[in-house]
Image (cartoon, rainbow, N blue to C red; front, side, top):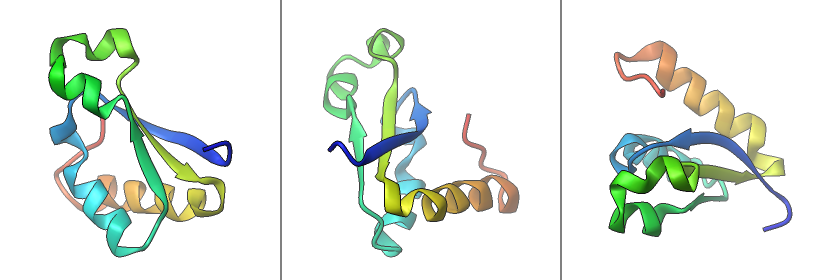
Length: 79
């Protein structure tokens, strides 16, 4: 996990479902931190610092490009 860096934060699990699918399709190494805790205690998301998307440092640019393309090409927006 030492080579993973945070590139995005989400409040709820429903906010990143599409991004997760796109990361899987591109075979990008990723992990969502605090996902289980926030699934169990959704109103504590801010206390945990949100759900953090971390990707391997070698996949950083590719993952950021996926998120940016999603923001620019659709009506969905990552907040």
